[in-house]
Image (cartoon, rainbow, N blue to C red; front, side, top):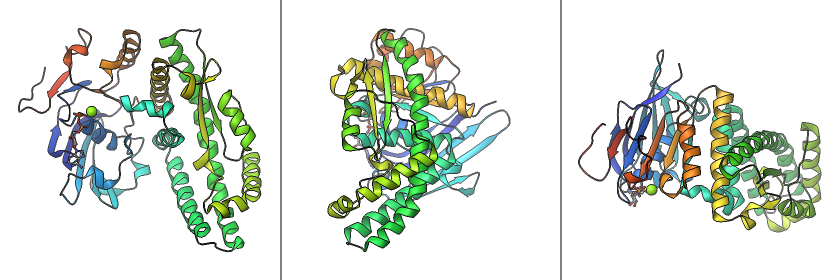
Length: 379
Ligand SMILES: Nc1ncnc2c1ncn2[C@@H]1O[C@H](COP(=O)(O)OP(=O)(O)O)[C@@H](O)[C@H]1O
Ligand SMILES: [Mg+2]
């Protein structure tokens, strides 16, 4: 039997001095007016399952103002297991424990994964590339500890390289960091490109279910080592790339050598997976610039559904679905597609300001929590 979230507790987390939810079932609905902590609660649950937050906060932002640290505790239960995970967040450091023993994040990610749906997801299509890379990495980290380790190693080395470039260090020094960085950069590229491949086909299915078969969605992953001309072309039309490990490493090495002078002049690294691009296309046109708001919403919803699908398949466990304030802004078709996903035996948390946005029957079996008032009750 797979694990579910049985209990969650926050101490000095965001707006909460103390918060706890217990006896959690298949569906929990958090209701409350604006600024009552609904999104904070979703974020807290995401932090204790995905070990990341869609808001990409610093530690300091997560700690209740005026307090030195925040504690989050979750109890994950199945028929055969009973796990307590605890995170302690201080401004510069986070530590985690599983049943009282200290654990690295990569050993907790994937135990009970989660996927968040939020109105802010629109930045995935409309916003800067960094959001797409971060979302892809968070998915990768939930799927495999190596993704996180490689990403961490790569980021450390890039930081080191940038510091050298900033201080006009001798070429030999920068090149020796390039040699260390290249294997991690290549591996991160390979992980991400493979994930995008998977996402792409699932997104096409999810998108077709919402928008109809006649609109076609495609996703490309474009490496930093492509020439400017190719990268530009890849923004106007979908392009497929296929690099094996050796080819990818070779292309990366070549690009780092070719653009060495540019990196020195700009005093920062310009080649590596931190500059890779993810492009979405609807019927061959770039969705960031050409899609309507409605189509863009469909793209992000399809991405999230694809995430849930991939997690369920690869980890053989349904991810928690965390739906923050999304029901009210979806039309009937997309709401139905989403509710269908909920029907698949997944544990779900939904927030809303207005209970009337739910289809009749959905709330019947739910545990309903009202925030911002004193009253709590089960239904
Ligand atoms: N670190 C923090 N300490 C105290 N309050 C915070 C912190 N971070 C956010 N808040 C407050 O939490 C409140 C509720 O946020 P949120 O969960 O987004 O509300 P909702 O989703 O219900 O509209 C906001 O008013 C915000 O100022
Ligand atoms: Mg909110």
